Length: 350
Image (cartoon, rainbow, N blue to C red; front, side, top):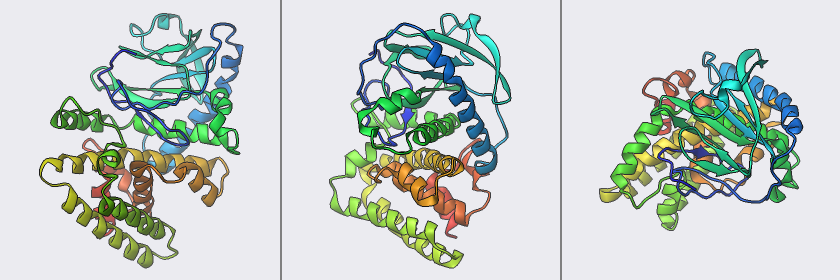
């Protein structure tokens, strides 16, 4: 796989991903595909794509409180074929032959082509046609694309055979990654942080967990912070929620002051950026799961996936609390200089 100088932030929802080469890229190999052949089944998936884009529009409007924008370049694939939505001419062979179609009320260009087991990415590189989902910037960080496996690939994954809500999971992951397409301002900050850490460290959203996970006091504090924040989010009244949230924030500040010092100080901002990105994306995915008919407990379990990934689980807890205690947070979270998770939580507990 060729090196790609960009960040590909993917979700760990139900998947164990590895990051190598792509900077921040996660995938799990489960399937070997017999490629080439008819793309009829991929064309059938356009109904799923339209429903997913409709869901994204709803989450974007009602939950993230954002104005509509054109759909970014989507690269969606099954075992045989790739569906491109709004491919960019000059960066994809054959993009000039894309059809103009209307999907989810928007006029987009669509191109459906077979693949040979590898999916080309914008500008540079390729990834295997296996269970994966991530978003990344291109065009010097000015635009974003999203690549994701379509439902047939999710359903064929052995580790998801017992998942009752696999289609809801796939669509919620899509919403998670669509939220990441709004995070371009954070990618520039990650570039700077990567330079501070040096060429030997490939950063991803589990970097802090890998660096500090064996430190008992650190990991114990993380678990306590999560427990308090989820209690705050579930509290029936504002005063109780505020009390638990303040306790969590105090623990968080103490942990960060004790451990993010000297040469480790760079990890403070790294943690904050990934809590912001993964937390907001997981919160959007949770809202999407609710919109698709799951109850709160089932939606929470679907998105948390056992809570073993710190940035995603602690991040989700933070945004659940922020949404409960700090109305209008979305304007700060998705502004020109986006507020981070810790900054939003600080405002919420004032």
